[in-house]
Image (cartoon, rainbow, N blue to C red; front, side, top):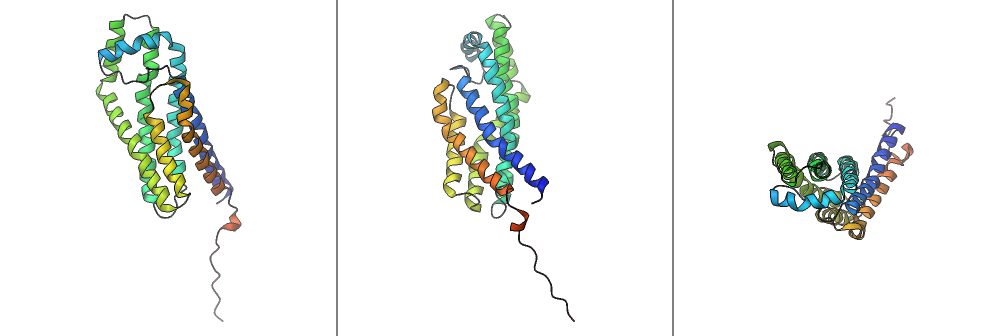
Length: 234
């Protein structure tokens, strides 16, 4: 691995802990009860008062969520670099699913966080704000992004965990922890700062995987096997 390749791999490694910290911060700051899909008027009417009371906080948590999903889109391909033998095809599929799902998640969470905060802060009537949110969420494009997001966010973790398990590129317990931690982090509702306790395993597993990626980049060129010299016939 040459110097440029090592530098690129180390940059990829850094994305994992940064992504975990962004994700946990977004979840901890998200107002309780605001992390919902506004697919109908009843839901919109329920969350608009919460958003109005915490609009600045919702803007911040929504922005952090978008950054975290952007980091996750890079983190999946970074994790896939650990799988170089058995399971590399499976890891590549998982990386593709994870990256596409995270991108779709960015689009969906614009409506969930930022648009909700904007509608609440725009001093619209509750009926007008509710109709705006429901119309935006139920648009054909957003429905497609939502479906792809949910399918990918639940399909990518077990596939990547299987690739890590099969390749033995990391300890098998770490592959299991990756699957469990990321699923728990994804299904947690907005419950305030206590979410830090539940998402701690996610932070730990992302840091451990980053360490493995960093160590892989730190291998000296001399550690690679050189082809054997072919004897010259006299």
